[in-house]
Image (cartoon, rainbow, N blue to C red; front, side, top):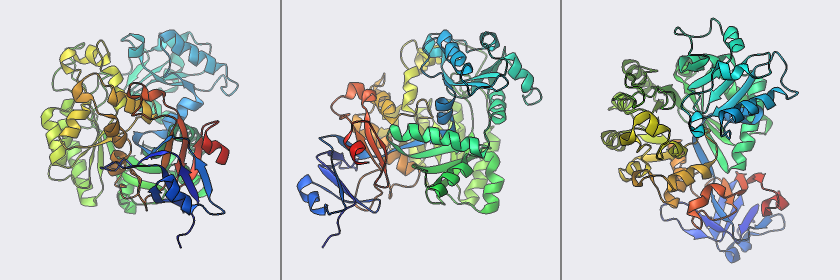
Length: 511
């Protein structure tokens, strides 16, 4: 006789997102794994005296979302500090900083921090600068991070505090790019307790949006220890795969870490920057920026150093995850991967990958970890058109990548951390080469992320034996493809445990 299930979800539309995508009415869970999918009638046979049975009243069940590129402490900073991501003007961004300055938790000598502003959303080209921040009634230092983290705006007090930390070249009116922005992030890096506070805040946001696994890219951070502290304490709801920056490689080699080692917190590989971002004009291009004819971006890691890094990792059997936005940067990554990349090495972003680069990715089994939410800059008159000119606005070409046979994984980069926003952008992208259908977009945020993390045997689709990482949606994305971002998450389960339940939803009454 079959043992009863721990949990049975019934009267649902359960999409496995497997290649043939069968849809079921119910799913049963035992010991943290899916044990059966089928009709409500059949799975009622698994309901015992101790089984929790939840009628979902027709709601959609999917595999839990895998955010394959994020920085959860930064997501947490949006929750803890001033969230500038929704500001629709310079004045509103400054008003949000001013409101944060009045918070009891911010002392007069503390750093006043804001995260996530995007001047292109204001119809402007100039970021916040020291003159803007000087008007805030805060005697301590002020720093406002642009959404991509490649640029940070600071006031004069902050510049004084940072004296000696900043690289040669100084700043442009309190605007710091790339190495300067890195120096500020390093100065503000939290200790172990602070990292745990930020991770808990980021985790709350993640599970509320249906995320069950994150690939977190960390550098000189207390986050790895904080994650493991949370796991030991039983308050880590997410599955985590960590990618350490290249300056951690000596330690990784010394302790013999292998890709995918670990349990709830795993080691994914080594991350490096190759270039910067389009917004900061630091993405490395083969042709000049349209709005700065003398600029082609910059190398954060030059091609020869990148090649040496790839060669070293190949001998260690550790994967490389390389941030490359501009077309020249993507080509440099693929040159370094030539005849080396095995086990799905990754290109992060690949915003301006050429047709030839796309074919090379497919041939080399390279994963393109891309951000569909970046499409918000791709419309007529948007940031990409202003920076790159109208001939180069067809960026993050999801359809081109998928049709070429490239493994595509979606990540949010925390801009924002919300898979349904990303799916919406993918489905409703400006041009055909950028656009996916609903099922393809959902797979990129589930199975695609699982494959990018070498975890497709465990998560990414729903099947008997796989982990019961599930998201319950309040409405069907197939039924409203034009407004997917507005769909609510009714519940999130990791290993069969409810880690988020929306107020009034069926799981909330059974949590």
